[in-house]
View (cartoon, helix red, strand yellow):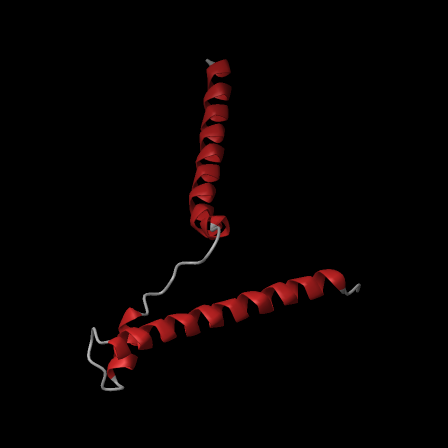
Length: 102
């Protein structure tokens, strides 16, 4: 029947369009997933580096000097992260307060 041919072509076109949209969504989802990250980024495990640094000073693992060395490394890392965060906030504030107009 001629009326059925039109519906089948229309359904086929609709299936193709919905499949293309689904494929585009599946390809874009991993790219957009990075935008959803909140808070601190994933921390890198630096315990091996800290351990190697503290052992390089001929300090026995578990001794008071070793514990102090590891704490100092943690404090240094926290200070570096704080400086980086502060610099980023300062840059964002400077860009908001001093917009350039083309």
